[in-house]
Image (cartoon, rainbow, N blue to C red; front, top):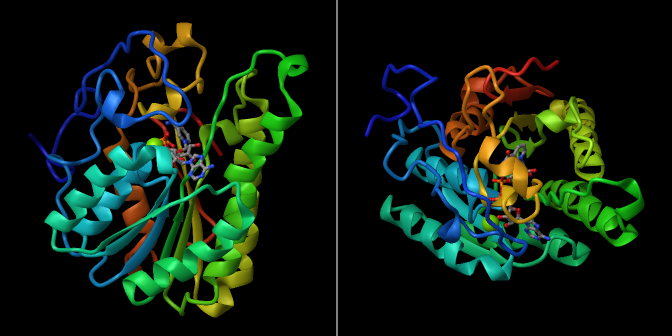
Length: 297
Ligand code: NAD
Ligand code: MG
């Protein structure tokens, strides 16, 4: 199979998938997703861009986070993986791939809606990896609800806890360890600019993440710590089948992008690698859109 360094047509690099209607309880598993995704197992080649780095990546058991974890390991980084205990099967698969590169994989199962767990994660990562100089805040929850009248207070709070409150707490606690040259990359979304009517809680957390990223970037710049974001478009991951999308939308997922297909998780990895590596030393407060061509600010 070709890798991300091979000259190729982006419209056909990956097939135009038509996923069948399917349902998984939250959080979904990559192990049960139909069709399966490309997280870079056979399609990401490292070039030493993160040699010796020590990274904490949330939501790195599956989807985009898993693709970032594989890429970081192949670029020479050790990785601490944050995920929910129910995702152990997916997480172990990614840990094996990281170890196959001769890098350290440190599994850290736990719930990011627990504030104490968030505050403790950077310490655990730093102790397990011998330091911490890269954080990727990528965990997120997305549950579609058509009508604001049906959107429960509990869901509203849970979405905010997972997507933005946890990000604040992890960034704050990580600063005890991050030295000049370190980086934070936050996962936002096209939803930050173009909210879907059935995702008002989720989309508004993503707008908050964009703003938080820019503000924190200016605050931490004098310390030599760079903060940036990545805004994915429609990427085929377990998030979509665990109530992230209405079921009837699944077969059409990603087809209305200018490229005409959904993205695969591994197509996100180079953006995170770039924003974490020193080659982006003058890039701060940026949100890199990786969305198949949808116009965005
Ligand atoms: P995913 O389901 O594979 O990853 C999300 C991860 O978040 C889960 O694996 C889980 O480990 C973690 N998570 C959720 N709730 C948690 C909690 N309470 N505690 C600990 N971990 C928790 O799906 P994905 O699509 O790869 O999502 C990754 C990020 O990308 C999310 O922030 C999502 O909002 C964002 N995103 C995805 C898309 C897309 O189309 N897939 C588009 C834009 C943005
Ligand atoms: Mg998962």
